[in-house]
Image (cartoon, rainbow, N blue to C red; front, side, top):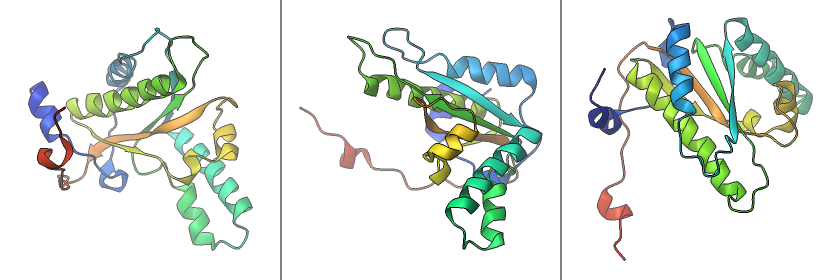
Amino acid sequence: MPDAIELLKTRRSVKPREMTGPGPSAAELETILTIGARVPDHGKLAPWRFIIFEGDARQRAGEVIAKVFARKNPGAPAADVETERKRFMDAPLVIAIVSFSRPHPKVPAFEQELSAGASAMNIVTAATALGYGACWLTGWFSFDRDVLDGLGLKPDEKLAGFIHVGTPTKPSEDRPRPFLSEIVTRF
C-alpha cells in the first residue's frame, strides 16, 4: 500500500474505457465503502447512500439509461442509443453516490451535499490505494429524473456521481494541475 501523502499527491483518474477486470473482491469493496462512509458529516446525518452496479446490474442500468435516452431523443441513431446502453460496461464495478439532505436547524443542505462529495472522493482514494483505477463521473443521465427513478432513487434524492472502478489497462497520464500561486491568497 502506498504512503498516504504520496498517494494523495499522485492520484489520477483512470478513464473507464481504460479499465478491465478484475474489480475489487467482496472484502475490498467492503473496505472501499467503509472508507466512503468515514467522512466529515456535521450532525451525523449520513446524507448519502451507495448503489452498487456489478455483473448484470451494469447492463440493467444501461437499459434504463438507453430507454430514457431513446424516448427523449426519438431521432437518435441506433449507435447513439447503444452508446448510452454501454455506459456502465467498461469498468467491472460502478458505485453510485446518492445524496439527500434532511432538514436540520444547524446543518444546511449544502453542507450535507458536500459530505456526499467527500464520500465520493474517499471512495476514489480508497480504490486507488488498493491498486485499482477509479474515476468519478456524472453525465446527462446523472441529472435526469426519469433515469434516477429507474435506478431506484427516491424523489428527494440526487446523484453526486458514479465511481467507476477496475484494473487499469495502461498507466494513466496526469493532467495539468493548477499552480498554487494561481489559486492561493492570504487574508
